[in-house]
Image (cartoon, rainbow, N blue to C red; front, side):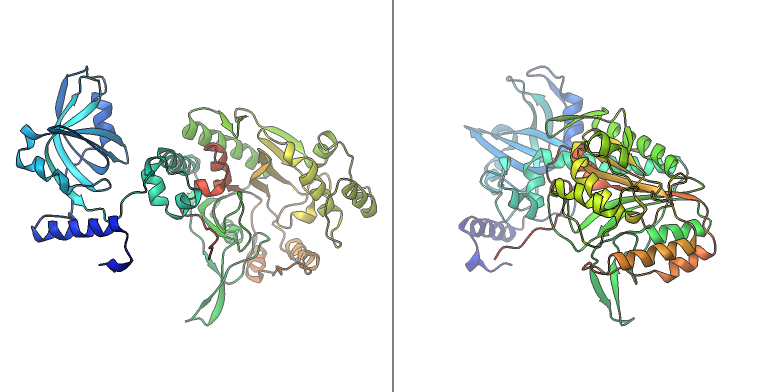
Length: 490
């Protein structure tokens, strides 16, 4: 039992009440409550009852969220995951048990049996004939729990947020629908869901700072994965032609409204396909997700309508000229590109080549304008070390990003299958990024696997949390992650 000297007065009162009940031999923490009906199913069945009309008997359970006494009758509200209903306690029905209602508190979890009816005022209710305390709540709900607004409290104590805010429960219901839709969609298309290591001997598949841990038995450092990509490609080499993984990635980087150290990614790989095939798959998948989760392909995010019924397509260099109002090309020298960047107040790294500079110009001048779903294609090879060179221009890669509301939500490309070229790209990346704080490494085992031969393939990554922000009209990524990471304040 907690140390009472540190407890609030209300908590002490609850503990005292608990002790009294236990001395009387009453159940305060039940083992089960069999044959419970969902409150939502009861309210759905009887919502058409007329005032003063009765239905049938029901057995429900949930958390007591309100108490109101009127003479010899008491009203309460009880809620479970499916909904809320009013309870009606009458002294002439409950007899001695009516006097024992004082044993119940707001926040307690209890079971109730009785007759469903509508009051004269038209409130669907349960006339309680039996009740049972199932779990005694020792901590009272926050004073204004039914309108819990404090962001810190909501995220740090998500359980209170879920109790207090139907909107929070709705967001995570949408999340569950979206994840289920992804799995169903890909399974129906013949993709196999797989699991790859989260603890990896090398970090790779993306450029990010990893989390490092130590394995005592092996006496070696391991890394939480920053991406599953290189393992999924190994499966293509092993004749698994259509695979996907839906799981957590971990990046030891900053916190923001768009970034959490652990986040959910979908990665999909298809043998004998290219980035055009992945573009088609991406559009169909996201349309299905949006439609199932929202009931429409047109949604509102931050007061702007997003229309997922149509996806635009534009190349990066074309978008810079058309939307950024400046002309760039690989025919220009580095000095010319740097001048364009400087004129537009774009910060550059001294060692960047043309590709990095063009990408930075795109991110500053174009990306903020892309509100509607837009596939931006043909990225510079320099920023795409795992993508295949464009067949028409060796400076470009067969890669696209899907941008929605100025945010990247998907990234895909025709996969590089030539092990000699892949090693060269890794080596160039190491040279280019050697001055960065996060050193890159070559995964020799992955190169070795490529040397056995990987079929032509397309690969896709979708940032699930960012997409869910848009689907649920959530300003911060913390709204769509049940337990986000938060800064600790002393």
